[in-house]
Structures are given as C-alpha cells and as structure tokens.
Length: 291
Image (cartoon, helix red, strand yellow):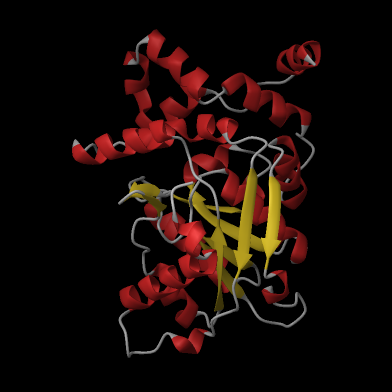
C-alpha cells in the first residue's frame, strides 16, 4: 500500500498544491508566507493523501468520482425516506437543501445519492475552492462572494438554475457550529426560497447526521469571538474528514415542498427558517443533540 502511494505521488503532477492555492487567493503576497506555515497547511489539508486519491481516480468525474469518495472514506450510510425522492422522469426540476454538519463528507455523500438517482443531472453551489478538484469541477458552480469574478459567478448561478439540472444547496453557507450544546447550522439564508419561486422548482429537505471534533468547534468559536474575517476553521475541514472516516451516517429525505408554498404570508427569510426547522424535525429528538 505504501509503495503504491509513493508511486502514485511520483507519477502525477500535484492537483492540490497549497502554494498554488495561496497564490490564487492572495497573489504576490503568498511569497511572504513563512515556510513552516506552508508546511503546516500541507499537513492539515493532507496534501499528499488527497493527491494520491486524486491520482488513483483521475479518470473519474461527477457521480462516479463522488461514489469513489464515499468508498474511500468508508462512509456507512443509512438512507431514510428514499421514496420521497421525486421520479427522475417527472419533468420537474428541484432544489435539494440540507443541513451541513461536516463540511465535506456530507456534500460528497448527498451528491452521490442525488447523482445516482438522477443519472448525473445535478449541480452543486459550492465554495470556489472546491473547483480545484477535477473530479468535482464538472458538477459544481463556484461561489466566491469576495472575489474579483463576482459578476461572472452570479451569471453562472443563474445559468445553473435556468438549466435542466437539479440543484444541491447548503443554505447555511458554512458547515454547522456548536450552538447551545448542539451541533446545528447557523441561520439559513433565503436564496433557495427566492430561487424556488423564481424558477418554479420544488424544494426537497434533507437531514444529514454527524459532527466534527470538539477541536473544530473551539476554533470556530474563537474565530467568531475574535471577529476574524478569515475562515480559519475551514482550513481544518479536510483533517476533520479524515477523522470521520469509517463512521456511520444517517440521511433522512423529506417530502418535496411545492414552490407555491413560499407565498407572501411570510418573508423569504421566515420561509427559510421554517424549512430549516423542518429539516431538523426530520432528525427526530436524538438527531438534534451533539453526538
């Protein structure tokens, strides 16, 4: 196994290159990053291990690539409510919304489920950093709210909603935090409600179980307390993914919510909060607690 790992590393060009990502984000300032910091980042994002996986699966993309990720992470997934997934031939387009407890594995797993059911006819709205993953890139629409290409990305989002592809969204925007002793999303944003009405797409609510380490939640807590604009906690998500290998997860798929539901009796923000509540109700009492 170790020999295979080394051979793969030597035979391919690095896909995930921390230094290259730094340059893409901060430009020439990247050269001032201390060497010890760059090396630490490489370890925390498991640069070698991730590149080895990408090398082994460089011929896959989209749903097959996502399914390979699920196998690699040895996710033991139980799906409830599979009958609530709309038929692939009903002629309708959907928005699938989910809580975001993990920040990586949950997205991979949901993509594999939706992709398999709809034969690859879906797109994620994701942080544009994930566009560095070749196998994921074909099914992603990158979002970088502070980037220079904001207008282009906004146009790409509209194009995705106008298409025949189903959309997977994590309305919180960030993965879950520890809130009052429970792993829970920050308040959901209203975008999925507005887009549901605008493009007449019914919404399918999904609950995903799981949690990250206490270390992660401490980092996220102090990041917020200190008012840091840089999402330091996000740097640890790959490491959290490796910590969560071989664990069981539960996916609960709810009944579709017709787009006409989102009328003027509530604001889009209020509707978003209501759908968020419905997702967590699907979990049952035990699913809401920090596991």
